Length: 286
Image 1 (spheres, rainbow, N blue to C red):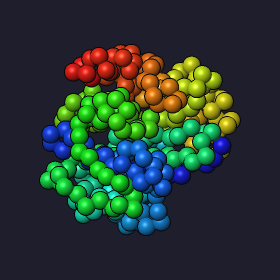
Image 2: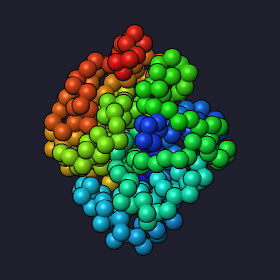
Image 3: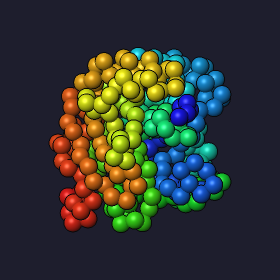
């Protein structure tokens, strides 16, 4: 087991609903897989966040959940900085505070050697079809629709880690950037910044906790102190932003199910069973 490192990522999405994905260099974390621009928080992120705190809070205060304020602003800065470093798209921090939105926060399993507490953000950005990416970080890049990336994954053409697959699935279901904005700014806005943690079951399945999950076991085994405190608060209000997504551990086959819970980020999926056969046989319905 290991302690989480805070990180952030930015989903860039165009008007034509194409999103930007980078194929990670084989020598870095998540090597060979496709991911959104992002990385761990650095000292400079905290400094800029402190300087721009008032500007950021004018647009993002409504998304702050309990204990969020100490890291949210810095995560926002890190997402912008990492995207600039990896894509060479020159982003102006102050101009983006009103445009960037929080999408979801995901935490890797406790038994993994490297763990990340990642806040994902999303930004509508156009006119960057061709990029001069940082080749130290990524091998290549691709603009494609969420369904396009999902189909490539199902056909073993690209590699995706579970958090990325989950977000592509959410984006695909939402279908447009206007729907994304409505989703983010309606209902329980805290759903975007409360922690969602992957765990392994005894069947080798990756899943998010559902109301039947052993929360006490989760608390006892968690070594990151701030997460212990957040779990106690979040999972005592289990109706808040909870869902369950199961994937086979080897990511070769997407068998499993999605449950519906109140205010769930996945409630919009209407409980549809996710199976690789359905993806392949009914691609237009994805």
